[in-house]
Image (cartoon, one colour):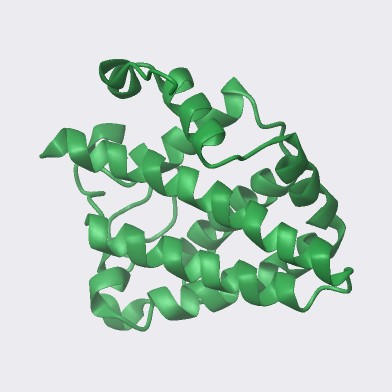
Length: 192
């Protein structure tokens, strides 16, 4: 039985990331499958982003989080939920962020810098990142992660890959999204 320093899991991001990778068996083979899917998934990312944002904008509980000014956005912010649409400039800005995030998953090395990036993705949805108006409840973050997982699974299952490789690719992304979900949830545990 391997001994884990549980206190260190809470204080050392690298240790936590390595533990999650090991525990979930997220290995170099998983990373290779994710990178190998990039030529197929890359062109489909805009469609996945659009589908995700249609879902996010179809519920007031998720859409309301796009009303406050997003960091780095300099345009006019929507005044109310009725002004939100896929074509709204701030929504376009946010869609670009999700597009870049998904591209990062497909193309980056999975190392300490990736752990920092995945952790920052979790933190940026809380006031801990600096903008007190950005405080997405955990239930909405979990809903978003579920939508992304389902969307990726649906797309991967239709890829022209050999069946075993396709199944393994789904599993690789599933492991990755559970790691991401933990690195989202940890910032909410700190708020409690």
